[in-house]
Length: 219
Image 1: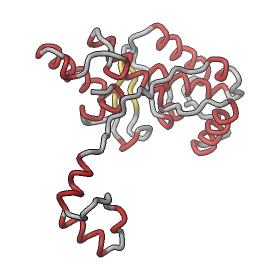
Image 2 (image 1 turned 90 degrees about the vertical axis):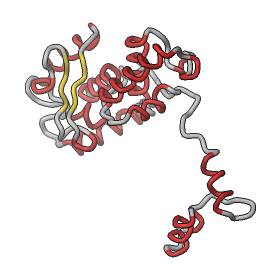
Image 3 (image 1 turned 60 degrees about the vertical axis):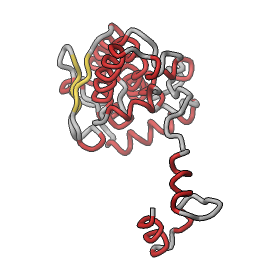
Image 4 (image 1 turned 90 degrees about the horizontal axis):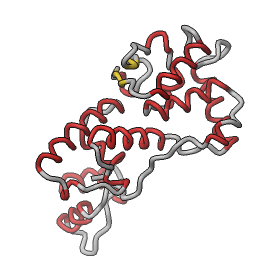
C-alpha cells in the first residue's frame, strides 16, 4: 500500500485510493478487503421473442440467437461463419473472432443448437453473419441500432444464462445465483464436481480462469 500511495501521489491520482478515517495504509487495505466483487443477483436473461421479431435485419436476429444458444460474445456472433465453425459435435471459433485471439470449441448438445446452425447455413452458406455489402463495423452498427430500437439491451446476459444452464446440466443442481447451494454447502465430492464444471464452463466462455465463473454463477 505504501508503494501504491507513493505512485498515486507522483502521478496526481491520489483520489484513486479509497478514503479512510485516519489515512493509514492499514485502514486503506481494510477498505479494499471489504469490497465485494461477486454479485448476489443473476444477470442471466433469455431473448424476448416479441422484441426479437421486431428486428428487421435477419442476420442480427441470428447473431442474437447464437449468443443465447452458445454463450457467444457479440463480436463472435457477428463474425460467425458456419462453414468453418460447425464440426458436427461442436462449433470452433477462429482466433480472429474471439477476445484476446484465443480460439475455442463449444459442444453442440441440444436440438435448438442444431436447428439454429442449420438455419444459419441455409441463410449465409459459406459466408458470415455480415451482409455481403457490409464489413464487420457496419454490421456491428446495424446490430447496435436494431437492438436499441426494439429495446433488446444487456445482451451480455445471454452468456450468463448459457453458463447457468450448462452448470445445471453438468452438475445436476442449480448455480448459487439461481438458488443452488453455495460452495460452503457442498460436500467434498460435490466441490470436486463444481470445480471441474466451472473450469469447463470457463473454457466454453473463452476465459482461462475458473474464478471468473463466480460472476456468471455465484459462489
